[in-house]
Image (cartoon, rainbow, N blue to C red):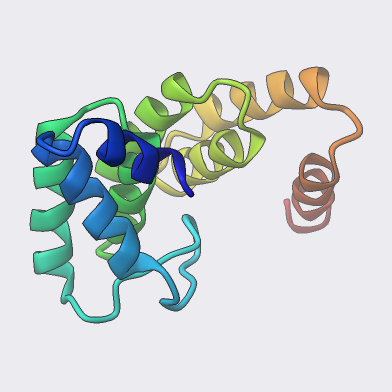
Length: 144
């Protein structure tokens, strides 16, 4: 049972938890996206944005919702807004290397290249043997 399902079980009257669990159930089994790993194929991007914003309004402390919102915004080319949500997700999950890498790539794509380079240098210092960090580093060396 997921942490969210346990939270709903312990506090069944909490509408925020229940909505998040319902959203998570809808997201299960859907196809992958570039940055967050899930996509609600039943909703168009406008509906996805509304649903995700409603979830954030209920609880701002949900890093996965920030990541989902960033993915939808990124697909729409709204990279600066996407980066802000990934920055928030990174603040909520400071040890999560995947969130950090998503954030720095989005920063670079949005035009904030210096900030992306600085964060990537810090990431290399902190995680020198991470496969994901080494992969991105190799890509940068080949393509830049």
